[in-house]
Image 1 (tube, rainbow, N blue to C red):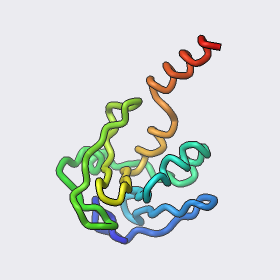
Image 2 (cartoon, one colour):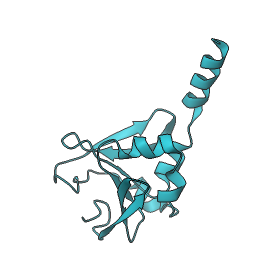
Image 3 (cartoon, rainbow, N blue to C red):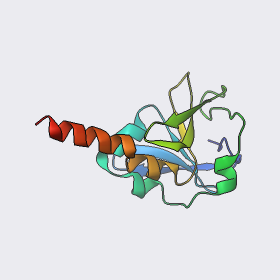
Image 4 (cartoon, rainbow, N blue to C red):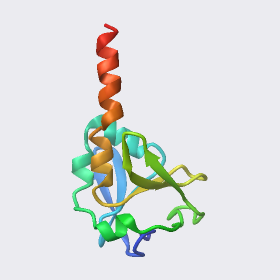
Length: 123
């Protein structure tokens, strides 16, 4: 698989039973459908997102092609981290995060804290 951001080969990285593709150059991460959610729930983001991100790549605007099905990906914004955007495929439902972004998203954000506070108040 080739990185959709920098066109470098991606390498498979196993975290438990989940196999994620990580770019050998920029550290970007490709998650097949629901792999990112599985790793978030397992608290394993730091095990797979180990590279500090390049601000230049993170800020690069424009569209990228899905590395699986080669269709145009949609830019998404994480509600808990409005400063982070990642790319998502509308065909295969995979997600691409630049290096460092998945770790930040998985750490939770303002909305996560709000929902925890709200659920604790209802008890």
